[in-house]
Length: 183
Ligand code: FE
Image 1 (tube, helix red, strand yellow):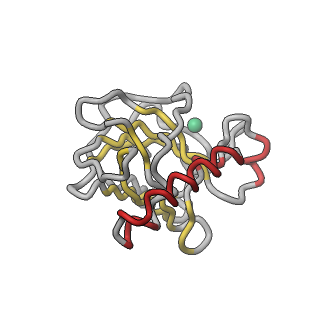
Image 2: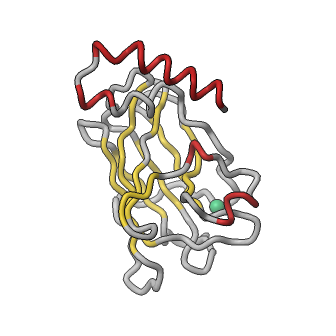
């Protein structure tokens, strides 16, 4: 962990003079590929194309997750498929229909934006969001995103700090996460 951070810092420091100001803040977030995780038992194909998974009847608070898909050299990747799925406010997955399931594509700047409701924890798992990420013509990256500061994180063997979203506003209401993929 420490050596990996040190390596990234060294890479970032070496790259700084050539990078414009906005890229400097990105230099620690790209470089290492986003780690893959198991898809688990609840993935479904043929999800609807939609950026909002919000269920009007849900009592769970709203959540926006936004970010970019970047190459290892920190270049935004356009038209990347992101297929999200997660549990509802009771910790259940919809295995009949497509509640809390949907896919979208990154824009020309590699950006995505998911609007949804905060998923509940379910037995054995920290709070998480599943996602498959596929850059055009590339292999699928299957992974999961986690929420910082959750007691359940320490109890979940799958949890990885590198896969935590950065919560930027309120309690779990807005998060950011940048994916780094092979292109
Ligand atoms: Fe899950």
